[in-house]
Each structure stands twice: as structure tokens, then as C-alpha cells.
Image (tube, rainbow, N blue to C red; front, side):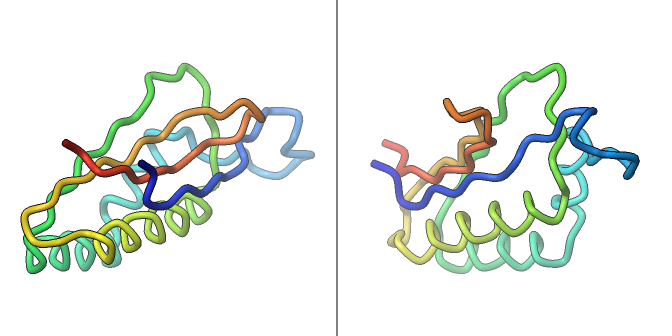
Length: 110
């Protein structure tokens, strides 16, 4: 059962219109991983005794805006921690939805 689900745009080369292309998903994930907000979420999960795993698809070309990914992932992660009880586990899945948007979804793990 999904706890929280958000979607963000996936960018193609022709969507940029002369602007710099957004980052590849892996690079955007690295940016979020280095952020202060991520460290706070990790600490909050540890203090709540809640464990999280991240499942990321192997995509050849998936460009996303780093700030959009950070907002969506942070909201989904916070919602999962808020809904969990001590000892609970959840996973955050990233996958491309049927509308060609990147889905960020938290679910309880068994």
C-alpha cells in the first residue's frame, strides 16, 4: 500500500529550448544525497527507529531537475517517516509512470 506518491517531469533534449539540460537521474540523486535536508531526514529516521530503502530503475536516459527531485523525494520520505512506527521499514521506489513522468512513491515493506 502506497504511503505517498508524487511525480516529476522527465526532460528530453528538445524540451530544453536552449537552456542547459537538467541532470541525469543518477546525478540528481547524488545532489540530494549530499544535501543537508537528506542528512536531517536520515537522522530523523534513525531517531524514530524507522528504516528506509531506495529502489532506482536502471535507465539509460532520464533527465530530471535536481530541485524537483529533491522536493518530491523529501516530501515522500517525510510522509513515510510520519506514518511509520518504531521498527517499521519502508521503501521509496522511483520508476517511470505511464504518462512518462518519474514517480516517487513510498510503500511499507514487509
